[in-house]
Length: 293
Image (cartoon, helix red, strand yellow):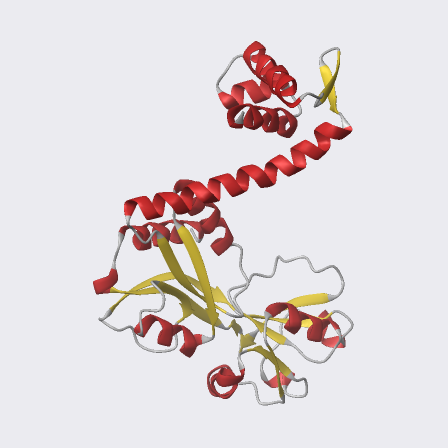
């Protein structure tokens, strides 16, 4: 029955018997027979056929939704059981900047998960120093972090990108009309940082001494909270790993941050211990690096 349920899901997902048959690598007549066999086994009709088209019956719509959960649970059970059978720790632990906002990590994770569905990926969020502490203590396998110090020979230091810096500002603020801003021009607007309580002082010192923000500082626990503060006009937020082409409608504007005539840049890297290099670490690193090219 499990295989028949997968065929049924493919038909509904593709809204076509022929496309589902192609996806499942069987003939159209075979997949149609399998769906009828499933209906006979269940004792009720899943699809109402109309010439070459079909619609889900109310029972079929309910069965389809519940079957998605069933198959997901089944696949997770298989993954977990396979780990136990192999006696392996199929887990990749990744440290991730708390305030990083970019699509590359999501794209890399999608590709990695498709290629290695049996490997569990865990994320640990933190600010710069928190991430390096996790890496030093081997609580994570690798971290995506900004470069704030010289590279260490103890680690693999893979530069992913040199990103241009932006700020996010309420669309209602008059400065949102400017083509770019400098840290000095923002001195009368609070700077909103995404930081844990333990890291607030360190993050503030960095943005004061290195970036040059000298106004008031506000803090948020995560990006969503920070953006709510921006939308409500309480300050601006420096953006980690962003680009200007992000659509927030009229609520938020993303503006280049420059020093003099040039836009400020920052390096973002993957770090992992050289003596902890493993296949999954290097494979994920290669996939993520490709997303920045």
